[in-house]
Length: 592
Image (cartoon, rainbow, N blue to C red):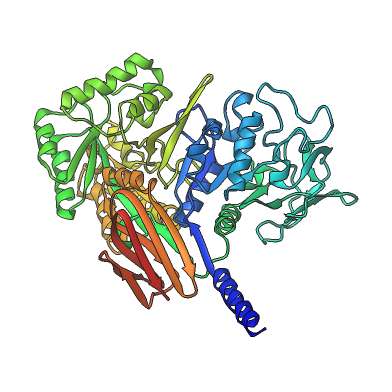
């Protein structure tokens, strides 16, 4: 009897120890989209906000199209999948949208969830077969006989007229009641016959009848989140139903749902050495030798890594100056400075190859003339092995365009679509040209008084953009200037000088675009598994190549750190950061 009691106590202690232990991977996100606009690399406003939301959680996002659903070996590299089912995320013929899925694609998605993934999807996901047949037609309901996702989402689906339906406030406190119509047609799919594993977080009602709206289901080791409409994750200023703050809170919740309950939350910081944001300085070519000299002196005085995007149309003496400067890196800006939107494939290829040949440099970065990127331009850049381009300007004041977070570029043309490894690192929307363009008016006397007036506007823009857009999203700011504008005089250069002085007080990683691209490509292959037990957290870190100054944000200062590699604990305001150089397999144990 005594032996049985001892065994029972030991089993109880073992169970308690197991319950106190949490193991997980710091998640990565796969966002399914074919892009937006004209298929030249821009993405939907909702994608931009998702990128920035996840970045604040230190989570890497890869943009892909639905073809990845037939590649399980790629799916298993990610812990969260966002699957929008609204047109603005898929500007292609219907078969490319996520409402049209084969049984194989649906099966792979279900298995991925079952093995531990977290899926966020709109209500129409997989409603139609790839050849356009509506799975709902025969039975009037989507169930396990015609829609494999039934068990995955824990619901069956039927179509009703929701014209007079409202969305009631959700249980997470993200959305209040929403009275706006969901889409142009009132007939929509709604969940019915909810399984025991599913929980309803939001309902929709017309006052007489109510149906589930936002449904969360536990399926195998994973989770699914079924939205009543993906417009809930789209910003109001572009036809969506939510504010930026609501979208941020939703994605924060998804991260917690994916990881599960943890006592000591740890996040990756994308920028080295515990910097909160990053800044890159770039110039396009154009200007007099005197203007170039003024810009080069400014670069050297401030010790600023700077990228010049160049064509052959620069004076030979200026070319030599640029090539001799250690702080200056030269990258591609085309051979003839054309509008790439007017070029075919062959002409596009020649522009890149001729410019490389002229400068005898294997360029890895590019900016399109007139910041007019094109489908063939993006395609050829990727084919030639370029690492980044910076032409899709970021603007979050008048509207949302571009991102302060780097992202890989999806493109499409006609029936062809693909996701590139080429990174988009968006520049500021208004360059110095926007403020100093009066210098081009030969009839105007662009005197010091007028320059000072324009300089004040330019300074205000730089400070506002950094503090209101970049800083809140822990992003990167890419300055775009020209010697022929900022270099007109010391007066026109003063806004940039004052801005650089300010950045040096703001914990900003001031670096080059080349360094940003290189680091981002390393982070995409970074894997961190976490084992949390009692007051101890063990981190197993795997990376293919050296990531210097890898930074992890900690919930509090550890009492002890056990590590075979050197590290630093850095405090920034109220936050503590663990900083170390990582390569290969590393293990650190933190005790709180």
